[in-house]
Length: 331
Length: 263
Image (cartoon, rainbow over all chains, first blue to last red; front, side):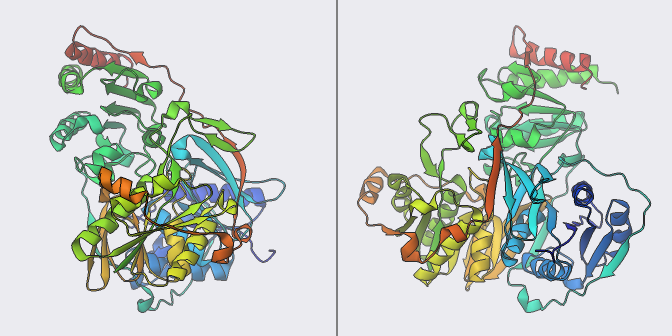
């Protein structure tokens, strides 16, 4: 497969900027490219996105392919898969890396099947096998109970990486090339059409960026219960998170879910309330600097992961905790 | 309206996490003893979507499952819940199927059925967490796919899907036939009645092996499992904060977190 060469990353754009996951993916790609002694390129797809190319170069890319088309303004699977198929067939990278984001988990599998190869999603480690030079793709399986490393001999080797696992590279001043590729999109190729996007405005701090997270589980029992968590989050300038059962019950918006199928967070302080701590959930918050658990069940799995714990009914513990904090906190 | 639901059998993910072990030599995750096989929870969500459509519009629901040594009583629960047919793709060669092989197998079976309007899958399986089979089937059958659905509606030959994304939600619409993968937000699978469970044990099911499907799975496996290890857990020792009353414990927790300079 000598014709395949180089590492490619997908340069996801959120609100006209390169989010941290995109930077982490670039950093990871840079390292793999250096290990293989090959080039790193990245692909910017969207409408009016060319101005981000220099930033991608500063973050490690040797080449930036820009696919700019008004039809690409919003992410739609069919359009983006077509465009990425075209770019990959033209550039022929050995490896393609994306972020495990809402876009990455949708785009990577379909693109992989389109290219008749296979992707590995949600990787927490990517490396080059010294003997075979294949991409070693390490990902949690069984909800996080095992860590599996796969290889795949069909090219390109595609993987998505989990948020907040790879280091963020520092921008450096270095040369790089910007190459434009025509999208050449036939609008009729877009079969599944986006009718509406609703952006949920998060009051206060974004969950992904919060330094303090107050997270509630099944034991919170109601949307009203989550209001109390919201109040505590506001006091601590933090954000509210939730377990999957709490989201499934619609006590809180689904995009507040922390865990494998939700968001990966790494705050300084994660306060888990009435939340048993399934391994799926813990996978999303295990990187928190400190974890505090409040739960009635002393055997709850969350206590095995926590640094501080209170065994008791959150309805009684939480108001007293909040009032005491009001007293103790400056201002 | 013909709906196909793809269901994977997995070890019950509700089984205690602390009892799960990793056999590094055999490259297998060993579940605690007595962990029963169940239908993958996200696939149950997909089946519930199909049943809601059947309730509203009428539909014939065909469930397909692929694997080796499938637990028929477990998969028959789909019939008890309201599915009309159950097709098992069973062969000794179907043991550790990767996403590529699974999608090709299921697509082969779906092509054999020939007639389908909507194909539903779970967004990912609770054991491999691969999250690709739905997209793969769509791509192989050259039909559109909408992933991670939290709401699914049908009208005028189209499927309208609300999906959860990290900063809000999206509504997509695709012409039928299409593939939709279900997220847990669509709702849990209804409980079948006892008499339906009993009746389902006697309903006929169809079984197809690799030869009947005309597939050579060894040519369809793409992933090699190189290594399996136990994850490094968080290194922590929980310090329990106590008090005479829960309220006092709460106040003491605040004091402790201040003292530890965490707040």
